[in-house]
Length: 400
Image 1 (cartoon, one colour):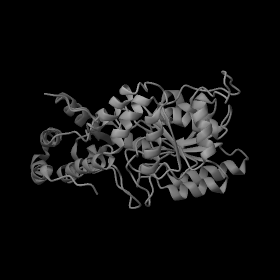
Image 2: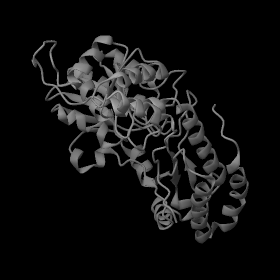
Image 3: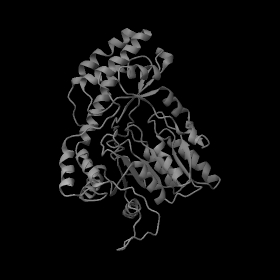
Image 4: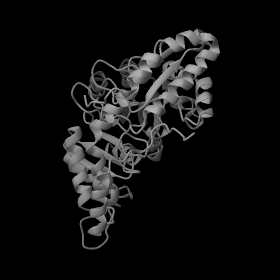
């Protein structure tokens, strides 16, 4: 059986025209007209004032920390339930991460825990230099109370929106409300440039400085002169050309992934012990990945049993992020809370969600999970709650 991947790249065909133009004009460089155009088009798409195309979202986080003045010995508060790339740039600066657990309603940073942590730090005169909030699996964090907590102490908020392009928060795109925001165009993201990212901000000077730092920090001179340390973090003109084709189909990709979620939800939500990542009332989740939790106390079916069954059918799935405070490299770091993230890691599984999945792919995933439940003694329930959903897999996908 052909492998079903978790979230593979999905080209629209539009990308080839832009890439061919880059070749025809010989703009095969880490700058060029496609980079400029992609920055402008992306900023317009997300509602950002300014944007800088970069080699990865990790590079964007690193630049953000530099631009907010994070130095050796400082503390940076960051979401606990995330990928290590959200945290590693803190160590690049010689700073120390402090983790904050998730809230059950969004799976993202708990605003109350953040407020309590900042209040405690203020009492002892040791406020963090910055806060990084991560928007997980296509869902925005609850930004208003997080921003309020940061503003109370004058702490800049950096948004890691690598997984949240296409989502909304009260009419805004997550990533544009903090001091700076970063997005990822890695091969598994909702749109891709193979590898790449975007840094956005309302502050033109910050973006101008980021662009300089990302281009080896060259001073404006006819010769090579450098007055600060720089980095090779710019996106190439060829990859930006791919991005220009991808950004034009973003809403279609979101609609398809939301359709996949609805299909999974219809087919599986009534099975004992099965639950899904919630969608907060304040906005739209892009459903970059459909994430399910399994409670073995109710059915005898746990996350690992399902994952192994899917793998046996050549279907890729993946556990929810392992919280950072459980990672060996961060074992000595402080964490506010932790039980919510630990629970989600223990029980949560990301299902294949690529926008190029076929109806047959969706059938294979659902049938495999249904078989696991049937073998556990819940066959009748599995059959009753899958037939209607599988019929509706062919429903048309519309852009909402």
